[in-house]
Image 1 (cartoon, one colour):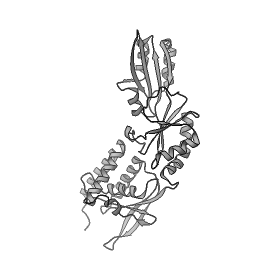
Image 2 (tube, rainbow, N blue to C red):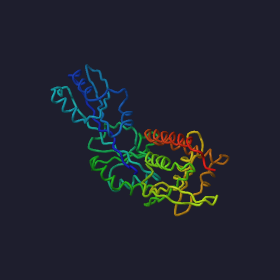
Image 3 (cartoon, helix red, strand yellow):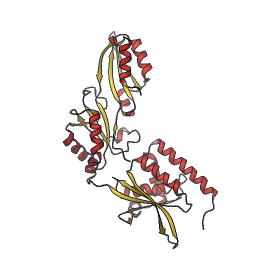
Image 4 (tube, rainbow, N blue to C red):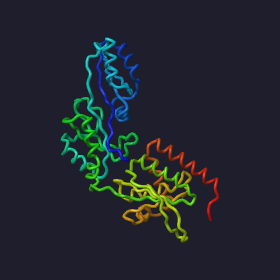
Length: 340
C-alpha cells in the first residue's frame, strides 16, 4: 500500500509565571525535556508525539524548554488543573495542525488542485514553527519522498497550503479519499501503471527473494500488489524454468520500477544473485534506457548504484529486514550445490 498523508505532532505553547517548580515537575512526569528548539522538534516528530513549548517568565528573564511525550495533551492539562497549579499558567496557545502529503511530478500543480477544492492560502514552508498562525488552521506540507520514515528538511517542497476552513481531522479524512486523484494530477495522468516483476533464481530461493521485493515495495511505498503467481518461461538454454510473478499497481513510471528491480539483483557483496525482470503491457522493459544514462559504467556498476539508492531511501526497519533476508539467502546458497 502507498500512504499519501501523515499527521504531524499535536503541539501547544505554554507561558508560565508562577508555581514554576510544580509545573515543571508535572511536565517531567508527563513527558521528557529535550534539548532541541521548536523548529527542530516539529521537523523531527510525527503523529505519535505531542509537544509542549514552555516559556518561563520570572523577574524580567525568559527561558524556553521543549517537552515531548506520547501521552495526550489533555492528560497534562487535567493534571495541572487537578493539582491546583494551573494558576501559574499565564497563557496557552494551540499550534496549527501539521499534515505531510506525498505528491510526485509537478507538485505545484497538485497543490493548486487541492487549493481549488479546499480553499486556503499558499505560503512558504519555512519556518515550521509558526506561533502567528491560529490553532484552528492547518498547514499541509508536501514531499515526493516516502512517508514511511521521517522526511528530511531538504525533501519538503518549498510551498505549503494553509487551510483555515476545515479541521485537521477533516482535512486528513478528505485527503485520504482523494489523495490518489491529486497524485494523478501532479503526475499529469489520472492513471497508475500495472507493472509485472518476474523473479528468476537458479538457486530456487524464490520465497526469500519475494520477501525482499515486498520489503522494498512497502519500505519505499511504491504501490499495491495486485497479484502473485507462478509462471513458466523458456530460457536461452531452451529449458523451461519457473519464475515468480508479482503484479504491482504503482504511480511510478516503468523505468523507475526497472531501476528498483536492477538494484534488487545484487547483494551486499556486489554479486548478482537473481534476476528481476520488469514487464509492461506484455513487453519486457529493457535495461538499455537505464544503462544509456551512464556511459562507461558496467551493468554491475549501475545495478549497485540502484541498490544503494534503494537502501538510502527505505526506512530503517525495512533495511534491517532486507539485510536479514539477504543473510539468509547467503546461508542457503552455501548449503546447496549450484546446478550446471
